[in-house]
Length: 236
Image (cartoon, rainbow, N blue to C red; front, side, top):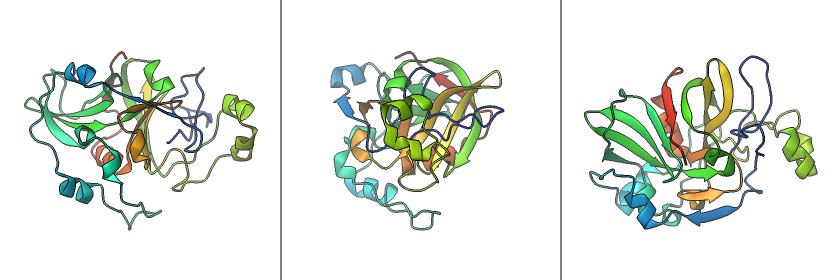
């Protein structure tokens, strides 16, 4: 799982990605996988797909990325329900192309493409990801960010104290390869979209954090999302 490098709006304020002030952060070793979303709940999403990936296609899309600063391994796609593979879906909205819509209840993130379509990504949702909703914007982006555990996490897990000054970027860093930080009125909301290599968490709830996408999906979204992009987080 992945958390924030926590550099807040103006003051290098270290906190975990999407700690939502009173919620804690997690590391890959500390989060717990929750239960999967039910099929009946997913049916409420109201977005008909235009066709999903085959297993062979998914293996290519989620294949290794050896040229990254820290080479990224292939995703074990057999651990993911195929409905969470990246795909294009019908999405009825008045929002402009490029807008990101986070649907924590159904474990999806959408990028609006226009003409009634969106790119849909499967996601995991941390406890903090269910606690906040509203309109925001991408105030900052980071590649291979530093992660700093919040004070609350260090109190719960003293072993995290060694990273009080920041955990260097890398495959073990909870924030992963790419991170989008959500702001309102110039202030960091502590709500974060980050990348994860833990395939089995996609489509599930986890103990802490915000919204995690598979690294390959997050890199795709990141590359097409400039700073100041509008983000809508739906109520959970």
